[in-house]
Amino acid sequence: MEAFHQDEKFREMLEHYSTGTYADAEVELIVNGDFFDPLAVLFLPGETRGRKRAPREIPVEVEEAGAVRQYQRITAGHPVAMQAMRDFLQRGKRIVFRWGNHDASILWPKVQAYLREVLLPPNADQIEFQVRPYVFDGICVDHGHQFEALNQFDETNLFIERRDRKGVKRRIQNLPFGSFFVMGLINRIKLERRYISQVQPFRTYLAISFFIDPLFFMTGGLRAAWFFFKTRFITHPKRFSRFRKTLKLIAEVFRRVSLEEEAEKFLTSSEASARRIQTLILGHNHQATSRTFRNGTQYLNTGTWTPITSLDMGNLGHRVLRTYALIEYVDGKPRASLKIWQGRSTVTDDFA
Image (cartoon, rainbow, N blue to C red; front, side, top):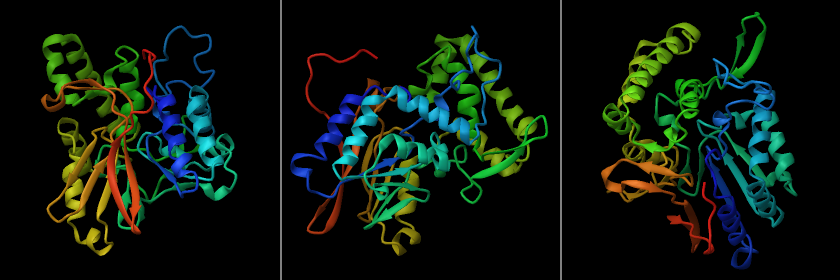
């Protein structure tokens, strides 16, 4: 929920789908990963107390107790959104949480317990935390980060034990390189250029910066190269030791995986056919998409509610699109579509 300023619109949407026509209907909100963004919580509460400058090293490994404190900070910053979800649950609706590469820490049991305390569901089964892709009625809902080597988690080994400098064993999350990159490098750059994570595609921004911001181009490039070398060969050599994976990581830095292409591969695969999956709903890359492939299968990407500055000529400019997928049942069959939440018109909006 970093860079999220749509709390009131979010409240309106949840109220719409839990009152009036939907008051007695079975409604389920699927939160498909990266709803929370603990990777963007630069400092845990108390860490910067008495400091005028950021520390040399921003923590890139957080244990379970630290993860809970991150979520406490996030929820405290979005009281309207949290209350909206509580009201949604109080009206008898359900919430399913999927995890993404930015909020994988939601898989910690104590984080889940904390969210239950915050959201106060009348019945425990009104909140569900999904580890695997959510598949039902021919629809597969997944965040999408697993298609990228940079952000791919080892789902068979999500938590590991690692000794700190004092030799003490610590249980931490087995994060992919992309998470280290965000916490250890992007977060530092954002202290100087807060918009950096909202520009797409990033490689175009880098190319333009060669002309308009050459100092950033050179220093940023050197910092990124050093961070990659340090992470790969010094601080975490065993975790990213495979040569083939190293090459994939480097390749994805220059050419990001197309989720639309990956979706088409999956939806035309024998696996999807065997599981009778007709619709794949992803998020992750913040690019709202609705596509029907030749075999009749459907791909939706729910985009993002946070601001995006696009440097792509097809949709050049700065925008906020409150996109979401709506799954309705008509004659007992599901029908998925991509929507934009307009909400109630207001005279003014907050500048943020």
